[in-house]
Image 1 (tube, rainbow, N blue to C red):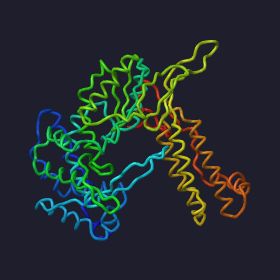
Image 2 (spheres, rainbow, N blue to C red):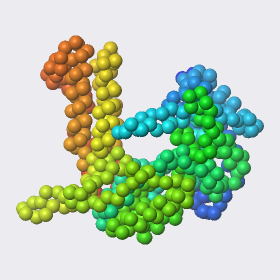
Image 3 (tube, one colour):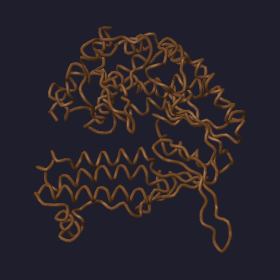
Image 4 (cartoon, rainbow, N blue to C red):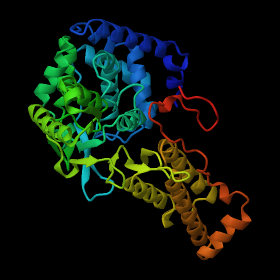
Length: 460
């Protein structure tokens, strides 16, 4: 990094970041204390140097591709981060800031031939969006409900999965499974702004949000300005999605229609009876229609969790109601088991194949094994909270097979040569990480965060 970056406030100590956290805590407490309050003085907080620097740190940490201006993060560091932040602050303060259109790319959806549109803003625009998110997120976080888990501080996939385990144990074994069709692209912008205005009255902030939402996307050299949507890929888009879908959360009646579990646009409803599940699905359709949205029909169904019944996929896990083996003629205990879904397994194999393709034969074995280990550790860390031992071993064995083939090709020998290197000539299978003994089985009423990790320490 450049000398200018090294001399930045964030590298001189933790104080600037702590001040930003203090600001967020103050905003959160104020919003929590008065649910009807509309905030009039937020603009000056977005312009604060420590907030902008914190925004840059978040953007740099997330890495990411360049936008339409082709400016990379490394180029920003060469240009000077402090210099860029000064320019952005001046443009915002003087009303000259105009975001560039986001660069539209299409990425394949895992397990299907469909492609998902992704919008990549320029680095400078990502910094501004991150600064806005830093200031607005605590205000709306004070309102968000426990049924929402996606893209929220200190909440994540495993928190949502724990609710599913708990509710199934309590007898809610009729599951409405769906997701919202093209949610990010379909949200009406005017109604989204009305939702924001319920809490934000600062006209400068509202004007900036409108400018960001109207920036448009560049697709095949043509700039388009969709009338709906907050582009998926923007830093602020997940927060805006939660702000809008909070309207669904707050009118949902868990007593009448079952327990709602929402991770961004992925939705489950845990119900006690088939009739309640059918009523819940009907209610869900009505509420989404009122928001200008609709469920994706191909992924909408009602599943009954019963012995030898169908299961469902949620957040990368396959879920199924199973019964343990009985002891001495006694009937086994029934519970909701989960393991990496078939789609997650395919994605893992695809990634391992990418890391061991012929085009990487010039790389050293240590480099390739290191890349595989990084993937395996991250993949296993997510899926270890389940009944995943068998499938984790399958993925590890697949990585071992690919490594054997890779070594054989690299030395222009067959698979048997690769096997001899891995199994006999290397004392530790070339350093390929082991995935045994790391699985933690989820249990109803036992939050996953309180369980000991592999090192015996308790998670916080």
